[in-house]
Picture 1 (tube, rainbow, N blue to C red):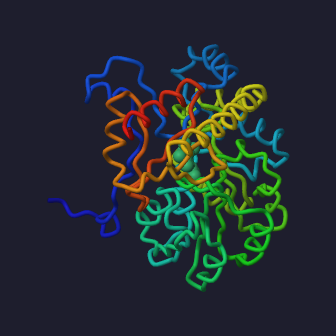
Picture 2: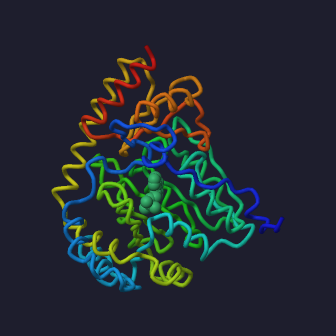
Length: 362
Ligand SMILES: Cc1ncc(COP(=O)(O)O)c(C=O)c1O
């Protein structure tokens, strides 16, 4: 056997939600199959993005723009942040990796919640960082405890707001204090993959911290509300220093050509974003009510997914739902064996989900 790098030996590979194609093949299903496993947009992709992509599909033989010039300018117009402070990646997962790749030496400490988005742990392992895991309290980040863990060995503090898989947020007041507590030589990554879904006034906008703090990197994505998960486009804002370091270690042409075009168009698709947000809010209320009447416990969410606790090993219900064509997500790797993380779907998908749960629990 060829020996792996030591750091790589213990990595458990990322386990994505099961693709519909795989479930069809595995179970031989025929009827409608719905995927509520990966927090994709149940309404599909932004129509403006689809139109823009189809108009440019013939150019697919050309390499993409290596510097994402047009998309960075669109982002700059929308968010009022210079392009020199902007980086685009093949999904925000690539940006997470680039931060670790540029900054983490073996033995550097990285503070994160346990559980939080699993890629933080994997990126930390790849580069030999020492993971400092801080347990959630009441399914929320314990940012006081996270702040207390910072020491001279800390290189990065990374947190998702809201958290995948629980959906809770750190409110603005708390975040204001936390941001001030992180020393300027420690990178604070604020992963806001679901921020467009949130209209709550207590939710902090990570971009507001960038002017005063050159150690903050804010990550966003086109995979969620814009419905472009299949195209792999994420983006981040931070100081020229951090963005420059990340640009140094990325591979050329890291963002595909069609993805850049679609993302640029999707940014202007306010109607779709609003429609998706409304669908999510309505779906959330519907599911809360139905889950309550089924006697199931859930964590109120700020994202487009709900963590439901079945108070028993969730494998059986996951498998039973899958046999009925409803793909959800177990969260064993997040240390939550009795829960499923379920994406909020379209109205008909939500009904199908509830019918399936009802049948199983009866
Ligand atoms: C908190 C969080 N960050 C980042 C991502 C990755 O998104 P992307 O598709 O942009 O790589 C996800 C995806 O589920 C997520 O939940």
